[in-house]
Amino acid sequence: MAEFEQNIKSAIAAQEIPGCALVSTNRNGSFHYAQAFGKTSVKTENAKAFQLDTTMWVASFTKLMTSICCMQLVEQGLVSLDQPVYKHIPELDAFPIISSIEEGTGRPIEQKNPTPITLRHLLTHSSGLTYDFMAPNNIAWLKYHGKRSSTSGKLLERYKAPLVFEPGTGWCYSPGIDYAGLLLERITGQSLESYMRANLWEPLDIQDATFFPSTRPDLKERMADQSGRTEDGKLSFWSKTMPWQDDDGNEATDCMGGQGSFTTAEEYLKVIRAVLTADEDEKILKKSTVQEFFKPQLSEGSKAMLNAALQVDWMNNAMGGTPKHEIKDWGLGGMLLMSDDDETGMKAGTMLWNGYPNMIWWVDPSTGICGLFATQVVPPGDAKVVAVQRKFEKEMYEQFKEKSGAPSRL
Image (cartoon, rainbow, N blue to C red; front, side, top):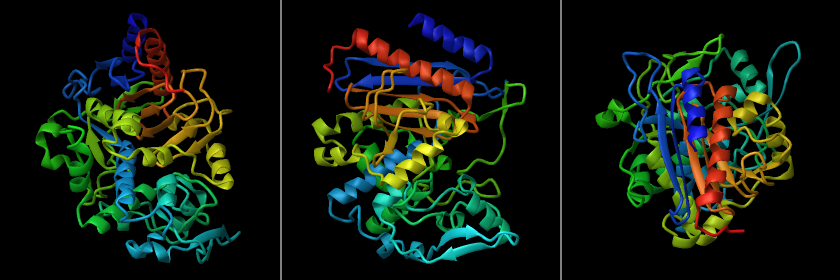
């Protein structure tokens, strides 16, 4: 462990990362690792020691929490995974599909969507929705119509481009879970934050979490800065408007269920450990729901598109940095490994996902361990950060194997 931690310190000294919080635990708590390293900013006047309670924009870490909350509604019979969502989000019913781009004119050719979007589609990125920068057809659509990607603080204003494939037939990383959060709000009559606080954060004793830092000055005081990578490979302060803000730099007005929350490493560990243990204690989800949560969900076409995306270096890095030849699928809360990852020790059935500022969490039901690596470096897919992250994951499995008294869940 001393050698591993020295490697982390060396990476910070070399400006490969500014600072980070690393946490991991197992089912019964007999194994626990929690350390923070480095500074919260590369700007000297802003820099404080990075701590386990340093507040971070956790970006797509939000997706897991929103997915859990949506599955609670499924358990209550308030919504199903496979019914059209149009009863509650009629706006999506009007979304056409971009079938092609006309050569020469650049005109997008659109067709009516024949397959209704469902909650299962939204949670698995198989709805046909996509973030604009992820799909050439969306970029072409925006260009043709003289539009640009919006960072509006209102969900329905931000994502208005057509679908890029028929729901259930493909895979593209998307705002589907942002819409799933909207679905929850319209079903419950509560904001996503209010629902999440009552039904996820409070049951797990999570106090330091919010979608709106302006309401929590104590969390803003502990907020880490964003860092970006310059051409020489070093880090610099990054002051670009962040995705949770609107075009004028103001705080978002909607709870963005796919990207909008702020919390700490020590608090988020409670979420992923609750997912790990829910099949025993049913604290946040029923055992039967957990089984569905970790079940591969994608059609063959969708799985093929996911694995094709993972062949692109930056995409693969942004999605965990796992070996490209290993086949992946998608559960209801994140990406699923379909075979063992021999580089780190993660077993088949492990669920994992990232957050935009080069963060990663994983839950391995087979081994009985979970953990997360948290820093604040943009853009995602940074190779230097991912190299450190992978070393951390490997170290946790080695230490768990040596020290844990918990039996494996093979």
